[in-house]
Image: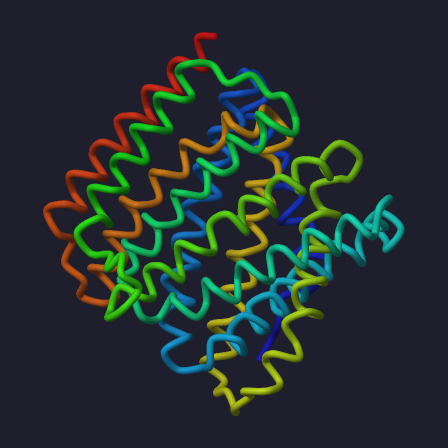
Length: 312
């Protein structure tokens, strides 16, 4: 079976990035950041759906390790093209701090993922922007204009419409895993705040590469403790996960670099619409009326903020 030469893969990626930059270079930075974030959200939604399917076949911690290991392998042709020195971080400690935080959030996320509907997974993840926006305001002194606060509150209200009826706040019964998923949100927020700090002196590629490297290293012992054989089709699935994850994190990091961190959070709410559609298509999870109503509120708030930021 023939394989695609690494040089062709590298050139295809380079041309794709150049084409996107040519088409969006004339747009205001905040608009560019929103577009990068929307593309990242679509990639992550596809990734979540595929990972959910794989975690029903492979132990969660093993799936976590393989997802980031293959993400690292996907990036190696770019490292070979530019040379390892282009990806040498200026602060290795910061990369490992970010990797540790993200690994902790992923452990909670992967445990809950196969046990709750895909739309609920996405909706609960929307609490992360609230922690991020407050953190960006406290630690980076980013301006919190009233539009951003209002849109975030509207988006969170949409999340409550979707998730509220399903969560068992007593911490018992089926709703327990909703709370486990919810606990991952502030941990991921801390990881993204560290990412914002790293963008001041690290390239996007360096941040994405070291994220895959550090999470793979930190997840390996957990994966080894529950390891089971995987099939060829499962390995192909994890390879696709690695590609989607690397693309998603690249776009997300570009969005964080282009504008205030708080400005990039509201577009994430659009992921709920895509998650509901994929949940229906892949897992026969029919979206409830509350999911559709919450998605409508979230989408309207996102589009309104995008127009306000573009005018500004």
